[in-house]
Image (cartoon, rainbow, N blue to C red; front, side, top):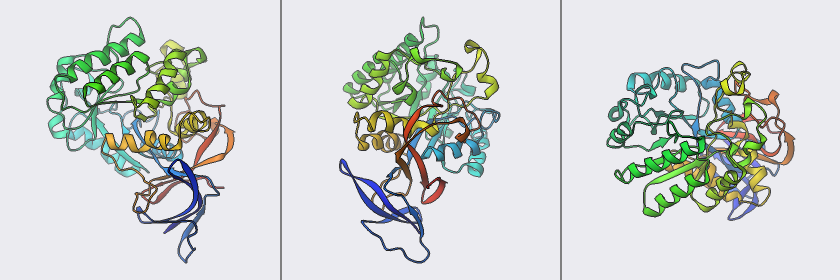
Length: 401
């Protein structure tokens, strides 16, 4: 049994100091003082914050096929360091999981090397080429969603054929081919996919990494109509804008937007248009990110900075409550994709993150556990770094002092 002593937990809108006793995968007792008994593994939380661990519904582990960027082992260790217990992996791999045989290649690696819960999204189209649908009928009960993340399904006939067959959510990388600007590309794709959703109202539809004010307006209208649509936002779109871009470690897709779009992203969360924060953890090698800006790949890593960024810039400033942070980083994404998630209550699943809310420090390249270091947040002074992560009662990261 694991005993967490002297932790701060949410009680309504406030925090209170409590001890938490964990047996197996569950929390079995929460009290002001739990007596230490023989056999207990005791961890002194030292009045830091105990919350449900993160559920990140947008993550790239790169294996199989791109192990020079990341592996399942390094990626999930990085997620654990970031206080994340559960992720959904994206399908832009080699092979792309578009049938059961290819899916097994990825699943076998995850079963062997993942230190957290890692769920699979299958592709909407074969090889993510947008020409023919994947083996959706046989994949339906083996995956948590379908997406051609990284590539928009621009062939709407293929998307429509997929909608006819899916039992799980479809997650869209909204980027219309041939648009004049990157912002137009997102908005046009959102608009036309929502129009298709009006025809197939049974489909659970989810927009990945939305970043434009107009996109949020379109999603709000669709929600008001009663369509089953959700969207996520990313820490980099919440806290950075295009005027800050310095080098290729600031290059991602969707790109950083205007300051007004950044503010709209925060407003979308606070108003309930966007209901979750995800990372789009996208590792690339140092060599790849050292190329000329226009020739290097899109994407940044994000597991290790999600909680400290959100805590520092939204919770600590009073912009949002701790309760809202927990809803956006754990409860809402888990419910949308039917995943387990931690709850700090007796009987709750012991998926737990402890955040150090006392220490402000710089994020450094040396501490990164991901195989790649492509992040714009190196050197940022942040508070709320995870120091302990439990997944189903098992310690997967421990940096308690």
